Image 1 (spheres, rainbow, N blue to C red):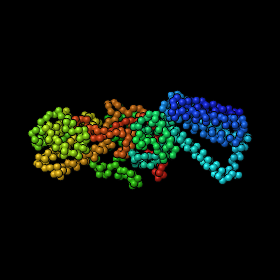
Image 2 (spheres, rainbow, N blue to C red):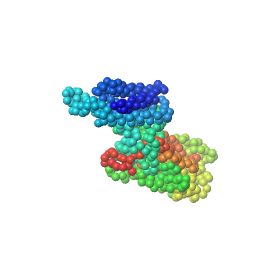
Image 3 (cartoon, one colour):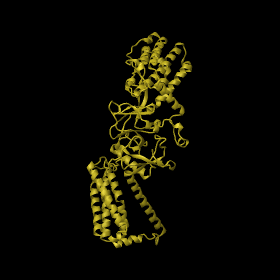
Image 4 (cartoon, rainbow, N blue to C red):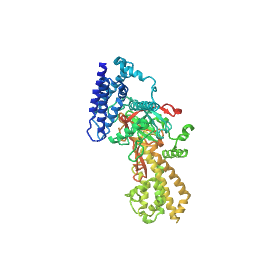
Length: 594
């Protein structure tokens, strides 16, 4: 008995020390942590020592057992509340507090092992006899309402303890996630539920940097769950995120309350596949992922990625396809994409130069003499705003744009610069080819991505040039807007423009510039690059959440523009919560994640 009392007293004084570590330093929600921990500790000490040991009030024994069962949960709640205020605590304080909590948790399990088991008789026979008496049928001599209340309270108690235990397991061992979007189709579908094992990923105590050591090593192809780096990670956001995740886990993934400043549910955490690893420089081109390293400086296709990337969902099995809510590209749009890319790769730059010069010359023949004045000092903005430069707007308003060029005093000079200034400094055009992605001398800009954007811009400009010249010819013949729009050649050209626009609208999902940018820059150690398998429907580490108007190529001052959110970034291992290892729902798709 004496040794057992000493064990409980050790627990009591350690809990008092834990409470003192939660003294507040600011007047906010964190002030609640100290009284919560202290009052719980004092109640535990009072009931056990003053009432049970000294007065032998054995009827309090079940209550005391409950208190020791709840001790780890109440104290971890105080830990979270203390760190939910405006400011955190020093790392050493967090470390000491976590160690004390672990010690208290261990002591509470030892105490429960004695007080709630067969060894209780060796401590106090009266206590053991009382607990044995409680194990008899509980309904004898009790009214129906009382029996119902006792049964209900026991169920509530069991449920609360189970929930807290699940939450602790979710923090340190594994966590359940529901797939919220179709970014990982066909690997994951919306409403699929996966288990993510976290122990090796260095899980942390809530709202602190104290946790288990990071032991996990990731490789290309691993599917991971990680904190979304697009969102702020300030203390206020972290507290809100933790409380939202707490409720999310409490309801077994059914209730989501983690919203942004606009009230929209955050895409956090994310589930994506690791496609780039430390020491690599990446490039995505025509749906193929390229990588190179310091040791292998030539870009090569990452063959494994071809088996993960889903570009055409139209061919998925019926059982999968019926559960896909949105197929971003129809079969016709996929065919158009492949056709545009083939035309771009086969583009003869010498032939393009000849046609551009011919169009500029023909345009002169249709314009009044006054419009030939001007010089090559003109830039794109001399006639058109940035809004006009957006390729979709330029084609949509092509009739008005053509008239603006025709009627401008410097229109002829502007059009000639638009069509031919890209040739300056190019040298021998026949030397450029996309046949070898590692031949930097044959690629405009020194890489396949910059070269392809340059060629795509030329394809767009050729259609613009043909349209402007055709409209000028029809206008010169006295035809009005209705006749111009009904012209068969104009319609065919606009159909080509629509085909190119449809490609440009999706090009940031299909292609990605060299990343990280700069010669000799590679993904740092401990960092990874992630993409969703459903590449046309995945807002992942290729993209930011803001669209901006950008030129299609930096190698032509008269380039058209498009709206882009291409802003690739890598993710530190510290933000990775663990690997998605098991899909457990629906049962028809149960199995290991690959």
